[in-house]
Image (cartoon, rainbow, N blue to C red; front, side, top):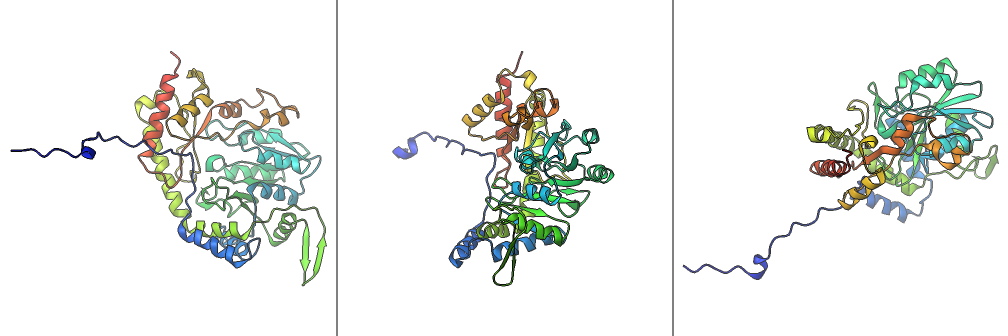
Length: 397
């Protein structure tokens, strides 16, 4: 019996394609939203207009009817909140050094001084047990950060604020969709600042919003958002205070309107992927490496990021070396964040190494791993295996 010879193409050995590069985050924007943006562009009204109004209305509904004003970043919303709260030169605002530098830069923008307290090494958020000792007669506000979407203890936070008659500006940039004891972050409390940056759980590409307490504050936010201008009638215009150029565009707002209906779906996906991470990190060979994991919170956190703490004392390389090897393996990582008080700007203001040991340790060793809704579950063991292999090769004897 004659056996048919394989064709040249069939005879070639099958080469497994290289795995695609996995970034640490990537937004998911559907075709309907893209089409909606095209409609806005064709409309001729592309800056602040009906789409911004509609987005604010939807956000207000989400936050239980509280007033909401949309802006072009989650940074300016914190500055606006501080100004409405009356924070200015000679005042102090208590915050944490483990955050994006914006959260303390905005304090400087008002002429006030940030007062840092260390983080809780478990939650990686502000250690509320240290806050009262940092309060002085100059303190006007507390500015906590919900790192990676894990909420700061709101009960304890507001108990301290009420006791000392302080305003609270919640840096909830990363916690849109998170809850505290079943209540949505932003649906209660004082000022709540949200970010819709490209890496957030929903995005407007760039943008943010501020949740306020009443219409008086909302009107002030509008003034600070756009050069301090107050309009009346067809041609009435007055300027009573110095504002900025912080308005959101209709293009950005239309993206936000398209993203909002997917929030629950995105959240569910993030939780599923986070659970997969814990499963992989619980394998004995990985567990033995001493990698620090985030709190396993599936009640309150929106799982904006999955961050680990590298075991510095066990490693023969630094975080940058780990990141480079992860990149070579086709996996993106991030750093969120270096300790703020060790930047040159803040060193010149008197802070130094050793001031906040827990924040400094995290700032040197925290590593953000890929987590976004378009990821697949098989991506998780790939990430963890790569990280474990790298740390295994660079482990001290």
